[in-house]
Structure formats: structure tokens, C-alpha cells
Amino acid sequence: MKLVLRWFPYGDDSVTLENIRQIPGVRGVATHLTRIPVGDVWTMDEINLVKDEVNSYGLEMEVIESLNIHEDIKKGLPSRDMYIDNYIESMKNLSKAGVKCICYNFMPVMDWYRSNLAQVLSDGSNAMAYSHDEAVKLTLEKITASMIDGANNFSLPGWEPERFGKMAEDIQFYQNVSSEEYFRNIKYFLDAIIPAAEELDINFAVHPDDPPMPLFNLPKVVNSKESIDTYLNLNTSSRNGLTLCTGSLGAGVHNDVVDIAKTFTAKGKVHFVHLRNVKHESDTDFHESAHLSSCGDLDMLAIVKALYESGFDGYIRPDHGRMIWGETGRPGYGLYDRALGATYINGLWEAVTKLC
Ligand SMILES: [Mn+2]
Image 1 (cartoon, rainbow, N blue to C red):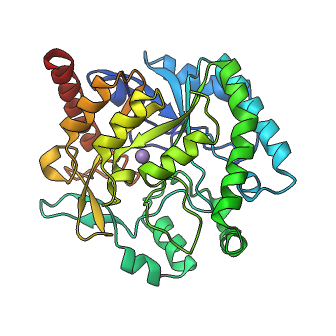
Image 2 (image 1 turned 90 degrees about the vertical axis):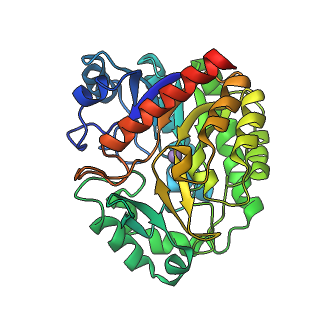
Image 3 (image 1 turned 135 degrees about the horizontal axis):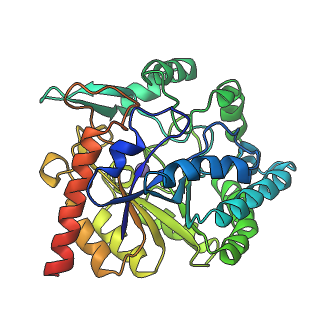
């Protein structure tokens, strides 16, 4: 496995590459060219600008998170073919730059959501939290306003400002889209890009819905063992794989994350892992906890053991951390708690490789 950390370029991150290179065991970053609008081609010049900066710190840029999918592809509009062509062009350029894994999601309208970006925990730290009862009562305007206000002036991945103006209209659009129709749009996309991924030696890794609970009656995509299976069977190439996000899946009390890790890693379908822990406050409500098993509801050792014993050889990153020691930054993406998470993951990995 290769350990990476998510990092945002163009000075849009409180964490520097100098910080990241000093975390033991971290080999590279998972990054995203945030200044290119969703749907446009990622040019060689833009890719190399970021890659050269990453490489200059002795770090690798083999993972992209995310190469976002234009809403017209998700909606199945005639313009999707042009956006798919652009997507493949970006993949070709990323491959030339040595990228091996692309994480993305197919969630309509909004990539992820929390009702509180800084819930104060009992130890005085704060973390992102979700209350389903609170979320369903909110209007779209209140939701977008709370995400912008809580972002501490950093961009939020998947909440690009150009999307805000169209969100209400997009939500309306999906009220008439059945789950079957939505999955046909996914298959259309996968059947177009997976042959390119095979040719370019790039693994595709879909990120689960985050949170797994439905909001605004939008189609859910990947939020359970069954839906992962359905998604991966839309195109059976090994390139059509999963980002096993333990926190996103673990937020659903119906999910056995150890079993999911075992099942899909054994099938060679897990290309990227986001390791984090969640603590449930009820069946639908949770906050993001420290990575340590005893801080949340997931058995992190059992998950890492399942990955190792099933032959996992992809990328792992610590996922969202809490804000601790007075740090401020992009919610979920501070330095300290993610560095502690990385160190914990290193410890778990060393233990399973030597003892199992
Ligand atoms: Mn994740």
C-alpha cells in the first residue's frame, strides 16, 4: 500500500507540502486542479504545474481526487458526449503525468454534506457532524449558506461556486429521474471511459455517497454492499473500482465495513481507501471522530487486517480529521489530526504485515 494525504494546490490549503513530507510514511498527495471548471479539459500545462510543485518536495502525484463529472453527464443530456470527450482528454493527460488512480463520485447535485462543519466534541476539539432530522428541515439556501460560512474561506471540494446557482433547478430535474434511469446514465459514462482507463493504465475508484442517507429525494448511488456490487457490475473491468471510504459507508448503520472491505478487495476492486472513523449519535446522526477504533464505532484494525489479508495493493489516505490544538483550516483537512491518523494507519499496517 502507498500512503498519501489529500492536498489542495494554488495556496488554497492551510497544510503545506513541506508539512506533508515530514509525516512519516506519506509518499504522495491526492490532489485536484480546483481552478479548472468542472467539465473543462485538464491540460498538460496545468497538470505539470501542480505535479512539478508536488515532486519538488519528494512527493508523488499518482492519485487525483477528484476529477469531477459534469452534471450534464449525470443527467444524461445530449451534451454529455462532449463532456465525456473532455473527460477522456483529461485522463490521457493525467496518464502522461504518471497518474495511476482517479477518485470521483456520481452523486447528483451535491458531492457531500454535513449539517455542522465544526461540532464541538467533549475534549474541546471540533469535527464535522451530520444530523438527518436537522438536514431535512433545511432549505437549499440554508444548506449552501451554512457550507459557505463554515468553510473558513477555503474552497470546499464538490461545492464549486459555479454549481450554486443551478442547484435548485438541478434538484428539481432529478425529481423525475428514476433510480434505473440514473444507473443507465452511469453505465453510459462507465462504458465510455473504462476502455480508456484500461488503455491508459488508470484505476477508477468511485467514492460512496456521503452521507449515505437520502436528501432532497435525490438518487442514491453507492451506499451499501448491494449498491457497490450493482455499480461495479455496470462495467466488469477491474479498472471500474471503488474508493472504500470507511467513514462514508460506516455512517450507514446497515453497513458492515469489514465485510465490504474483504469482499471487494478480494475481487481486486478496491483501488483507494479513505480511512476514518465515525461515532453515531443515533441511527442517522453522527460526528467524525479521531481515527482510533475506541474513539468511534468502526474497528479500524479489523478493516486494515481485511484489506491486507485480501491482497490490497492500492493507495490509502487518512480521511477527515478533527480540528485539534487550536488549528484552523478547511473543515476536515487540517494537519494535526490527519497526521495522527497517518501515524495510526502506519502502525496498524506494520502490525498486520508482521503479525498476520
Ligand atoms: Mn472519503
